[in-house]
Image 1 (cartoon, helix red, strand yellow):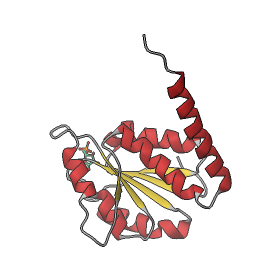
Image 2 (tube, helix red, strand yellow):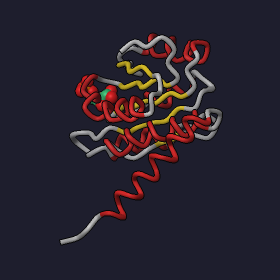
Image 3 (tube, protein in one colour):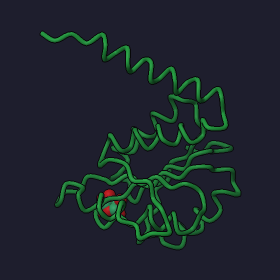
Image 4 (cartoon, helix red, strand yellow):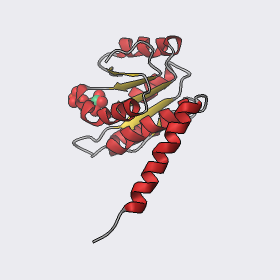
Length: 163
Ligand code: RP5
Protein backbone atom coordinates (compact mmCIF):
# COMPACT_ATOMS: atom_id res chain seq x y z
CA UNK A 1 0.00 0.00 0.00
CA UNK A 2 2.91 2.37 -0.56
CA UNK A 3 2.02 5.51 -2.52
CA UNK A 4 4.64 8.13 -3.44
CA UNK A 5 3.25 11.22 -1.69
CA UNK A 6 0.58 10.35 0.85
CA UNK A 7 -1.53 13.18 2.30
CA UNK A 8 -3.18 11.01 4.95
CA UNK A 9 -1.70 8.31 7.17
CA UNK A 10 -4.11 5.67 8.41
CA UNK A 11 -2.48 4.00 11.40
CA UNK A 12 -3.85 1.15 13.45
CA UNK A 13 -2.57 -0.59 16.54
CA UNK A 14 -3.02 -4.12 15.22
CA UNK A 15 -3.72 -5.98 12.02
CA UNK A 16 -6.92 -7.08 13.76
CA UNK A 17 -8.15 -3.47 13.32
CA UNK A 18 -7.91 -3.68 9.53
CA UNK A 19 -11.40 -5.16 8.98
CA UNK A 20 -12.76 -1.91 10.41
CA UNK A 21 -10.12 0.48 9.11
CA UNK A 22 -10.38 -0.75 5.54
CA UNK A 23 -13.50 1.39 5.48
CA UNK A 24 -11.38 4.51 5.96
CA UNK A 25 -9.10 3.22 3.22
CA UNK A 26 -12.12 2.77 0.90
CA UNK A 27 -13.46 6.26 1.55
CA UNK A 28 -10.08 7.90 0.93
CA UNK A 29 -9.61 5.86 -2.23
CA UNK A 30 -13.09 6.92 -3.36
CA UNK A 31 -12.00 10.56 -3.16
CA UNK A 32 -8.65 9.77 -4.84
CA UNK A 33 -6.79 10.98 -1.76
CA UNK A 34 -3.26 9.55 -1.70
CA UNK A 35 -2.83 7.78 1.62
CA UNK A 36 -0.98 4.97 3.30
CA UNK A 37 -2.17 2.44 5.85
CA UNK A 38 0.23 1.08 8.47
CA UNK A 39 0.11 -1.09 11.57
CA UNK A 40 1.98 0.77 14.32
CA UNK A 41 1.33 0.26 17.98
CA UNK A 42 1.82 2.71 20.84
CA UNK A 43 2.95 -0.10 23.14
CA UNK A 44 4.28 -2.87 20.86
CA UNK A 45 6.30 -0.58 18.56
CA UNK A 46 6.65 2.63 20.59
CA UNK A 47 9.93 3.81 19.05
CA UNK A 48 8.83 3.12 15.47
CA UNK A 49 5.50 4.85 16.06
CA UNK A 50 7.21 7.97 17.42
CA UNK A 51 9.67 7.99 14.53
CA UNK A 52 6.99 7.55 11.87
CA UNK A 53 4.76 10.30 13.27
CA UNK A 54 7.66 12.68 13.88
CA UNK A 55 8.65 12.42 10.21
CA UNK A 56 5.10 12.56 8.83
CA UNK A 57 4.83 16.33 8.28
CA UNK A 58 8.18 16.49 6.47
CA UNK A 59 6.93 13.73 4.16
CA UNK A 60 3.93 15.86 3.16
CA UNK A 61 1.34 14.08 5.25
CA UNK A 62 -1.36 16.52 6.42
CA UNK A 63 -3.71 14.38 8.52
CA UNK A 64 -3.14 11.32 10.69
CA UNK A 65 -5.91 8.87 11.44
CA UNK A 66 -5.09 6.59 14.37
CA UNK A 67 -7.24 3.61 15.33
CA UNK A 68 -6.80 1.47 18.40
CA UNK A 69 -8.78 -0.64 20.82
CA UNK A 70 -8.80 -1.38 24.53
CA UNK A 71 -6.49 0.96 26.45
CA UNK A 72 -6.30 2.88 23.21
CA UNK A 73 -3.45 5.34 23.47
CA UNK A 74 -2.21 5.30 19.85
CA UNK A 75 -3.99 8.49 18.81
CA UNK A 76 -2.78 10.37 21.88
CA UNK A 77 0.79 9.20 21.39
CA UNK A 78 0.63 10.26 17.74
CA UNK A 79 -0.71 13.68 18.71
CA UNK A 80 2.15 14.09 21.18
CA UNK A 81 4.70 13.72 18.37
CA UNK A 82 3.24 16.01 15.70
CA UNK A 83 1.45 19.28 15.08
CA UNK A 84 -0.65 17.61 12.36
CA UNK A 85 -4.34 17.03 13.14
CA UNK A 86 -4.86 13.55 14.59
CA UNK A 87 -8.22 11.85 14.24
CA UNK A 88 -8.78 8.95 16.63
CA UNK A 89 -11.00 5.98 15.84
CA UNK A 90 -11.92 3.78 18.81
CA UNK A 91 -12.04 0.10 17.87
CA UNK A 92 -14.82 -2.11 19.16
CA UNK A 93 -13.27 -4.36 21.81
CA UNK A 94 -14.33 -7.84 22.90
CA UNK A 95 -14.74 -7.11 26.58
CA UNK A 96 -16.28 -3.63 26.72
CA UNK A 97 -17.60 -3.23 23.16
CA UNK A 98 -15.33 -0.26 22.50
CA UNK A 99 -16.39 1.90 25.41
CA UNK A 100 -12.86 1.45 26.78
CA UNK A 101 -11.39 2.50 23.42
CA UNK A 102 -13.75 5.47 23.14
CA UNK A 103 -12.89 6.87 26.55
CA UNK A 104 -9.17 6.22 26.15
CA UNK A 105 -9.14 8.03 22.81
CA UNK A 106 -11.47 10.90 23.68
CA UNK A 107 -10.37 11.80 27.18
CA UNK A 108 -7.16 13.58 26.29
CA UNK A 109 -5.95 16.03 28.91
CA UNK A 110 -6.03 19.66 27.71
CA UNK A 111 -3.11 20.68 25.52
CA UNK A 112 -2.71 17.75 23.13
CA UNK A 113 -5.95 17.32 21.16
CA UNK A 114 -7.25 14.20 19.44
CA UNK A 115 -10.39 14.57 17.34
CA UNK A 116 -12.30 11.44 18.31
CA UNK A 117 -14.81 9.76 16.03
CA UNK A 118 -17.43 7.09 16.72
CA UNK A 119 -16.61 3.51 17.70
CA UNK A 120 -16.04 1.10 14.80
CA UNK A 121 -16.95 1.34 11.12
CA UNK A 122 -18.90 4.62 11.38
CA UNK A 123 -15.87 6.20 13.03
CA UNK A 124 -13.55 4.79 10.39
CA UNK A 125 -15.63 6.21 7.55
CA UNK A 126 -16.17 9.54 9.26
CA UNK A 127 -12.48 9.91 10.09
CA UNK A 128 -11.74 9.57 6.40
CA UNK A 129 -14.50 12.05 5.49
CA UNK A 130 -13.18 14.50 8.07
CA UNK A 131 -9.69 14.12 6.65
CA UNK A 132 -11.13 14.86 3.21
CA UNK A 133 -12.88 17.94 4.60
CA UNK A 134 -9.62 19.19 6.16
CA UNK A 135 -7.73 18.69 2.91
CA UNK A 136 -10.60 20.24 0.94
CA UNK A 137 -10.12 23.58 2.72
CA UNK A 138 -7.27 24.31 0.36
CA UNK A 139 -8.24 22.05 -2.58
CA UNK A 140 -11.29 23.24 -4.57
CA UNK A 141 -11.50 20.02 -6.61
CA UNK A 142 -11.71 17.93 -3.45
CA UNK A 143 -14.30 20.31 -2.04
CA UNK A 144 -16.38 19.81 -5.19
CA UNK A 145 -16.21 16.03 -4.73
CA UNK A 146 -17.22 16.34 -1.09
CA UNK A 147 -20.22 18.46 -2.09
CA UNK A 148 -21.19 15.84 -4.68
CA UNK A 149 -20.86 13.09 -2.07
CA UNK A 150 -23.25 14.93 0.26
CA UNK A 151 -25.70 15.52 -2.58
CA UNK A 152 -25.65 11.84 -3.57
CA UNK A 153 -26.26 10.88 0.05
CA UNK A 154 -29.16 13.32 0.31
CA UNK A 155 -30.70 12.07 -2.94
CA UNK A 156 -30.45 8.44 -1.78
CA UNK A 157 -32.30 9.24 1.44
CA UNK A 158 -35.00 11.16 -0.41
CA UNK A 159 -35.51 8.23 -2.81
CA UNK A 160 -36.16 5.78 0.07
CA UNK A 161 -39.61 4.29 0.17
CA UNK A 162 -41.08 2.35 3.06
CA UNK A 163 -43.17 -0.82 2.62
C1 RP5 B 1 -4.84 -2.54 20.32
O1 RP5 B 1 -5.26 -3.69 20.94
C2 RP5 B 1 -5.16 -2.72 18.87
O2 RP5 B 1 -5.45 -1.48 18.29
C3 RP5 B 1 -6.35 -3.64 18.84
O3 RP5 B 1 -7.56 -2.95 18.66
C4 RP5 B 1 -6.32 -4.28 20.23
C5 RP5 B 1 -6.14 -5.76 20.17
O4 RP5 B 1 -4.98 -6.05 19.44
P1 RP5 B 1 -4.61 -7.55 19.06
O5 RP5 B 1 -4.42 -8.28 20.35
O6 RP5 B 1 -5.76 -8.08 18.24
O7 RP5 B 1 -3.34 -7.45 18.24
O8 RP5 B 1 -3.48 -2.32 20.50
